[in-house]
Image (tube, rainbow, N blue to C red):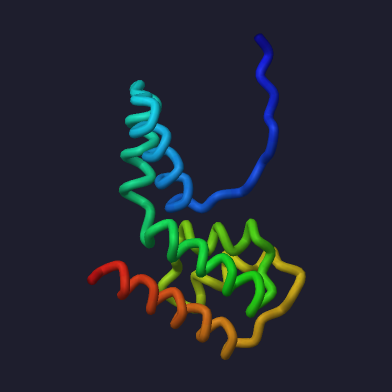
Length: 116
């Protein structure tokens, strides 16, 4: 039987982690690949899935980032303006230093929230 992709959506690491954990708990799916993927996502997800969705919305709507760029920002969660600038340099829009600092501060607030 040929399986077809019905839909496609870009996901951040935290969103992928939540989705995969839900699938594993619902269907009891286990395999070495699933286990390694879960381990990777747990290790590198820096916020929870709900916060990731909020950040994607803020980064795309308020700051005008493309969704795929916003997802990469969330996956990496840069701690300095220089790191963020490197990630968003693929955008056609040029961001002022104040806006970059504001985005880093937003990311730091979510990072601090996760640490609690």
